[in-house]
Length: 553
Image 1: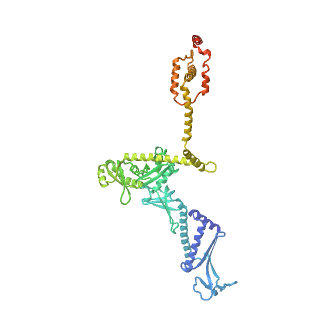
Image 2: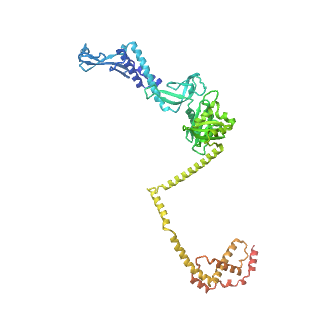
Image 3: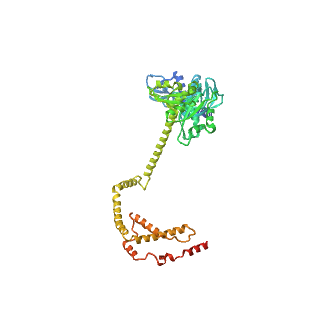
C-alpha cells in the first residue's frame, strides 16, 4: 500500500468530515475485525481473538487470527488448536502447550463479500464519529446563534447546512409562512444538543420561532442590553404574529423602552427585518417592567386601553386577573385569534379575563371579594412605592457610608480606636458637666455682688461722667468717619449725659465685669477728669472752624 496515498485519504476525510485521524483509524480497525469475524465464523463469535494493526509510516495493515495451543482433544476449533496440528510442517522452533498460534491474513486474500462488509461497517463508524464530532463542536453553543445556508425549502420545511452537517427545520421551527431560496444564509438559534452522552446519535435542534431567538436579536442590536444596563425581565412570543418584551433599567437615567426602539426606530426596524419575509410581519410590543403586578398587566395588554383591573388567586393557587376595558376596546385587547391576550398572559404569568365596562356589574357579582382598581389608583400606588423604594435606597447608602467611615483604617487596627472614642464620648455625660459649670456661676455671682453695691452708692456720678465722656469721644470718631465735610465735633449736652446716666443705672442690675478695682475708683475720685483746655468749652470759637472748612471746600 502506498503510504502517501493512504495519508492523503485520511487528511481528506478529516477535512471534509471533521473527524480526527485516530478516530478514522479506530473505525477502520473495527470494520476489518468485524469483517473477519463474519468471514471466519459467519458472524461475531464470543471469545474470538482477531487482531488488526494499522501503521501510518510505512502504510501497512496487519490482520492476525490467534488461537490457543492445547494438548489432546480440541473442544472449540475456532478458539483452540491441537499441538500436533500447530507443529505440522513447521520448521525451527516448535510450539508448546499454552502458546498462541498466530495465523496472518493479508487484505488481498479477503473475499469480495468481506470487502463489502468492511465498507459498510466503516461507513457506519465514520457516521457515528462524525455525529460525535458534531456533538462536541456544538454542545457549547446551546443558547447561541449560528448561521446556516438553505439547501432546500418547501411548504413542509427547510434543509439548512450548518457546515459539517445539514439540519431539517419543520414549518413549526420557521417564522410564520416565510420561504427561502437555495443558497440564502439565515440565522438559527441552537435550542438543544442531545444524545452524545447516552450512546445515541447526537441531535442538534435549531429554531427560528423560539422566544430566545428574538431575545438574542435584541442583545445583538441594543447595546444597553448587551452591556447589562437594560435587562430583559420577561419575553413572550407567538412567532409570526405578536411578541411582547418587558425591559427594566438599572440606571434611573436610562429609558429602557427608548433604548430598545432606538433613534427614529432604527434598532427595532433592524430586528423586525430579521424576522423572516412572511406577508404579515411579526408585531413587537416593548413595555417597561414593573414589580406592581396590576400595572404590569395594564401595560402588557397594549395597544388596548384598560379602565380597571383586579388580581386574585384561585382555588388551585394560580394567579388570575380580571381586566375591565371600554366596550370598543375589547376586540383590540383580545387581539387577532386571541393572540394579544395569550401573549400578555405568558408575559405576566397571570390568567387574564377580559370584560367590557357594560358587564362590570357581573364581575362584582361573580367575584365579590375582588377589588377592582382604576388605572389612576394603580399608577398612584406605583408612584408611592417608587418613592418609598428610593428613600430606602438612600437610607441604605447613608448607612453603608457610615459603616465604611467606621471601618476606616487607622494604623494597623480598623474599628478599635473608633470604639474607644465612642465609649469616651458616652462616658462624658455621666461625669455631668453641670457641677463644673455651677461653681463658675457661683463665683461670678459672688464677685459681681460687691461690684454692684459701690456703683449704686456714691460713685455713680463720677463713673458715669467718665463713661459719658468716653462714649462721646467714640461717637465723635464715628461721625467723622461717616461725614466727609464735618464742620465741627458735636457738643455733648447735659441731657445726653443725664440719659446716659439713666441707661447705666438701668443696666447696672445685669452682672458685668468690673472696669476698675475699688482702689482705682478711689484714686479717680481725687483726680480731675479733664484737662484744663477742655474744661471750658465756651472759649472754643467754632465759627473759625466753620470758616476754615468752607474756604477749603
